[in-house]
Length: 110
Length: 116
Image 1 (cartoon, rainbow over the protein chains, first blue to last red):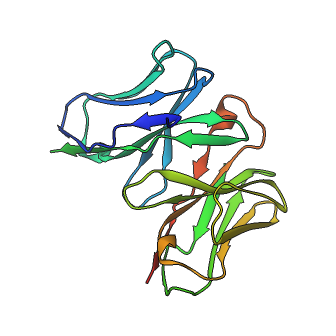
Image 2: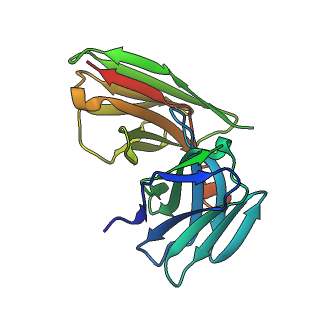
């Protein structure tokens, strides 16, 4: 079983929709989670990070962690075509490294 | 603020030729440095990481190697490229010390390698 898993998509939504992107993780010891956004042919950029359970909001983006079900989510409100990208979730593991999900490709259509 | 530079951005190399990708980080000292590969439509695969000058750990055995000749310089090399080495190579860094935001890894813009 992979440590972090994501549905690869693609997920296609109309502009203005609320988007829900999800990851599951296997190790209950994970406490710190990150979301990266990767545009085509570019390096991933950090979008948000959260610690432990609960929600964290930043503009149109909300990151949510449910430790009881080992489930992390990224919600995008009022999605825009510029949000079209691949979204990767990640969590630290031993040895100063991150373990990444495979990424979900999002397409927001005007 | 910290910045990461990676080059070349794109290269096409014949099978059997050597490879050298270079990465430098500015604005911080003693960073942890990483090389990842991302094959088309696939996730990030960690290739090498380094916690200090001359200290390299390999995650995946292959015909690639890495070196860290200076504190903020990380080089990915190969003596003879294979077709399977094609992909998107990403250099990344993080603060040496852990802590909430210190766990974040920051990526360069990437290098597209096509082996023909």
